[in-house]
Amino acid sequence: MTRETHLAPEQLVAPLFVCPGERVREPIASMPGQARLSPDLAAREAAELAELGVGSVILFGIPAEKDAEGTGAWDPDGPVPQAIRRIKAATPALNVWADVCLCEYTDHGHCGVLHGDGVDNDATLPLLARASVAYARAGADVIAPSDMMDGRVAAIRAALDDHGFEQTVIVSYAVKYASAFYGPFRDAAGSTPQFGDRRSYQMDPPNVREAIREATADVDEGADMVMVKPGLPYLDVIRAVREHVDVPVAAYQVSGEFAMLHAAAERGWIDLPRAMMETSIALRRAGADILITYFARELATLLRAQPHPAAVAETIR
Ligand code: PBG
Image (cartoon, rainbow, N blue to C red):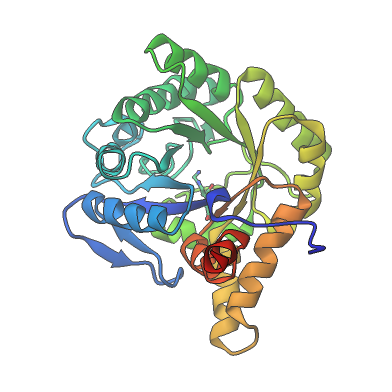
């Protein structure tokens, strides 16, 4: 009766890793319950998530081959466009988000193209725009750039509009920290940088004013929603961003947060369902409207099991 914050399945976004092939399911060791799925199995998983009430999925691609430019990112027959087409055909009401970044597609593992030892911000923008158009053309509802290049939201918005995708939504990973918590994801996607790190384009963990500047810049460039990532170590940042922008704010509980909870639970040190629910509601309480979480399936299952006023009304009738 007195609870101030609620969590609903439609606020959840489930990440899916899509690899080439048919009937392929490769479990990811550091992310219990998660697997790389071929487009057919990703579509089946998406249908089950939708059945549980989960609002959206976000797709990450694992291409057959990588190169210096990340050309696989805009291959119309790559695993992500294939999965988008299959999911939208089978489960049209589910929102399909496509993560846009080059790091899964480049052989060096950086999020943009290289110039000398560094990432060339401006040369990367047209490539991100090209990938975005490919995903929109396959039917993605949402384009979610996670590369952290400056100016990419404007470049992607212009390219989408030029190709007739005015209705495609942009959710920007506006506030993405250079974090230790992405380790398991990089295992899953094979996207660990081959040299250096991502600190020239991702944010410095001590900064919060900079987060507001990043979020505001992305909204000005046309972002329809902004994201803060990781989640739990940055609750204050979520709150600050929520108070400074008018668009919805999403929080990403990342792979390392997920792995950490699983590892402690495996040792019997914490109760996983409770910790999962508590960390999720904490992100909502901090100000996140939407949660991207590897617990989406389990959360939706738990939330459905709890008596809901509508269900109670049904039994009275
Ligand atoms: C790609 C990307 C990353 C994540 C989402 N998109 C990894 C990174 O920046 O290295 C991390 C997600 C997670 O850890 O769950 N740029």
